[in-house]
Amino acid sequence: MMRLSGILAGMALVLGLAACKEDRIRTMSLGLGGYAEAPVLVIAFEAGGIRDPLLPEVVDSGGDTFPRSFRSKSLEPPTGDPFLVRTTWIDIATGQAWEAEVKVDQDALTVEDGIAWVTAIFGPGARLVIGSDPTPVSTTVQTIDVARTCGTRRPDLDRDLGSEVDAIPFLREALASAKPEIASTTCTDGAVE
Image 1 (cartoon, rainbow, N blue to C red):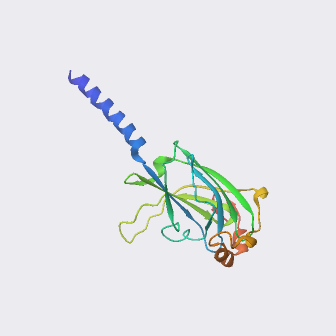
Image 2: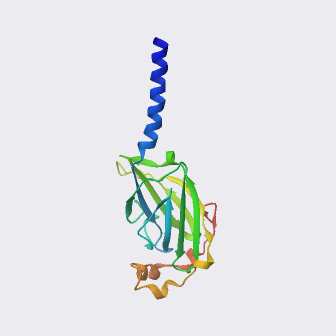
Image 3: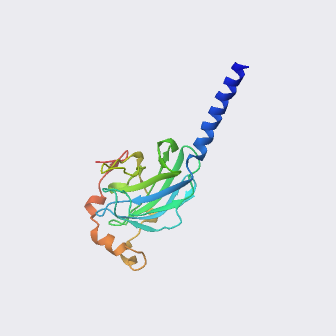
C-alpha cells in the first residue's frame, strides 16, 4: 500500500508540473526595440501564431537602453514550444525590406506573474534579437537574449519612405536621425560585424 501511494504521489507531481508549464504563460508582453541611428518600420510581426495588430510601427529606440523597447503591447500567449517568431521590416535609411524567422523556447523566456516578456530588437544590418528581460529589483539591470538571427532581403517590399512622412506616425523624426552607413553594417549569425 505504501509503495502504491508513493507511485500515485509521483504521478501527481509529474502531471502537476506538466500542467504548470502549460499554465505558466497567461499573456505575452510584446515590445519592439531598435536604434535611433538605424530605425526601422515594422510591417509584420508574429510570435507563436499571434500577430501584432498594431502595425506598421516605427521602431527607433530602446535597443541600447533599458527597457529595450519604447512601448509594449499585451497579447495572447504564443502557441507551440518552441514557437516561431516571424517578422518583416523596412530599414528607414535605405528603404530596403527584410524578413526573419527564429525559434524561441518558452522555457528560455522570463515569466513574471504569468506574463512572458518578449522583446524584438531590430539592429543595424538586418540583425534581429529576441530578448526576455526581467523586471529589475534593484539598480542592476539584467538583459537576456533568447534568440538571434539575421534577416534576409525582400526586394519586392523595398520602398522609399520619404514620401510617407505625413502618413506614418514618427516617421519624419526617424528619417532625420537615420544614418545609412550604420544601416549597411553586415549581420552574421545575429552578430553585427
